[in-house]
Amino acid sequence: MRHIADGELHAYLDGALSHLPEGRGDEVRRHLEECSVCRERLRDEEELRAQARELLAGADLEEVPLPPFEELRARAAAAEDSQTPEGSPPRRRGPLLQFPLAWAATVVLALGVGWMGGELWRSGPRAIRAVPEMRFEDRRSEADLDSPLGVNVRDDVAGGSRTASDSPAETGADALSEGVAAELTGPVEGGPPEAEVNPTTPESAPAVVGGRGVAGEPSEEREKTAVQEVRALGARVGAVPPTPSAAVVSPDMPPGREAMEDEADALFSSLPASEETSMAVPGLDLLAVEWEEWTPGERALYIRQLLPMGDTLELRYLGLFMGSDPEAANTLLTQSRAPEEASEGPLSPKVMEASLPPGWNQVVMRWGRGWLVARAPLSVESLRGILRALH
Amino acid sequence: MERSGAHEPVLPGAGEGAQAIHLRRWRSKVSVDWGEVYRSTFQELVRFLHRKVWDGERARDLAQEVFVRALRHDPDQPRAWVFKVAMNLARDEARTVLRRKRHLALLKSESEVGVKVATPEDELASQERWAQVRRALDAISDRDREVLLLWDAGLSYGEISEVMELSPGAVGTTLARARRRLVEAHGQMEQEHAAHS
Image (cartoon, rainbow over all chains, first blue to last red; front, side, top):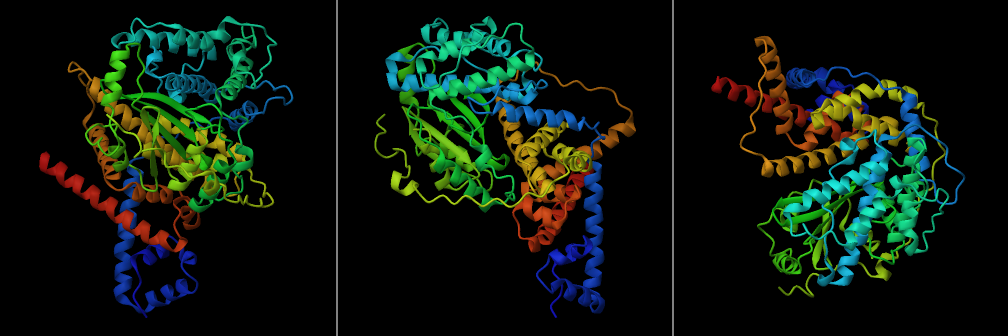
């Protein structure tokens, strides 16, 4: 009988022989009784295992207090609420939700930018105007979670406008960006409390966002209202709430790659292609929207969205130019590189491909005058399926 | 620069994309006692996440986020599911942190000076040990680290195989290799440390 492999020795030490192919566990036990060489090896491996255990214990964290389970339940329930489709029964009030709150803020900006981006590309270079620069890192950790959504967003936009002063957009507080700022700050000003969302009439969107009275409402209600409004805005810019997650993220699905691919394919086949251009994939939760600026002038809009099973989809728009100076825009646009030429820039698709995590794939496609680089732990075909939903 | 033609979107046509959709038939649900799973798993999940993101507060936040998602999705294999989602969140977190670091490196001013607080010697030694373990963990591959941390979190071979997408028979081999690499990486750190001091 052959000697025992290292992995089998470790399975023995871990009490996991039952996971070896059928019958092999018994063979291992018998062999260990007979073979002194393997018994010696077993002692070595046992020592190794103990050392690894000890090392791992050395990197330990002090026990953290267990947050009340009910708090998490409430957050989960409220997150469900925030995904209730339009026209469903009135929302219950729930506790203040930190994550959904932060996400809501993200979604507003994401879709706002998506819409503006679409506008920019449709209108051509002449229409390129100032867009408030948004330093919008991961809101989940950095949002001022005690502030009402509207205030958060307004502060962001206002702060962003100030920080844009080193760009050509300095003097370009034009109609477009002001319009967006007005949309985003709408809820703070308050509006007709009962204004109804109508996703089918794009023109109504600013009123929608400004609608749904906020002042005086408890913050949790305000926040959920904002989530609903974000979803309405999403509908307006071509995203497709309600989320399909209930149907697609199967609660029974074992977290396996193949199953995930199947689910992802099903999800993306079922996503309607949006009629308007959207920069975020309709129907997928948005996790973050950030500007990435690696070197001055080389900037990407980075959008992260939630896939089934907690994986994420990364979208990077390269070669976007957000400024008011058409000359500068043209210069930058002509400087942006094709993927196969873009070898030196840290934001180039080539360099990004080299840094792909194991199991991830990347698809590069033209986006207006720039590029869209989409990355996810999915097959290239599934990724392309996703991108179809953007058009 | 003319860039037409060659890089038009390579997207499947309507015909290719219109594959039949086979949604799985959902199995009848087995009720999961999430309160119990939470009490028995939360600390391990925080430890696991901490050694992925190296930030206690963030690890705790992420662990809570994992459970919020778990409660919404109510998966059948609760422990494998939460660790799988935690692993993905932590990977994502690591990428974000890496980007921020690069960004900060660009912005970092020369005036920035690290502040060192006087610490008793034994505490220093303990911190040094801790830092070496951390460096050793960072030195091995993501896959090795993940399988080690899952094992250390008390997951069974079956659960590890679910999370890591390995066949159950391959878990022992993967673990054996990862343990060896961790111990070797740590040994190397110690040697380097001894050489410097």
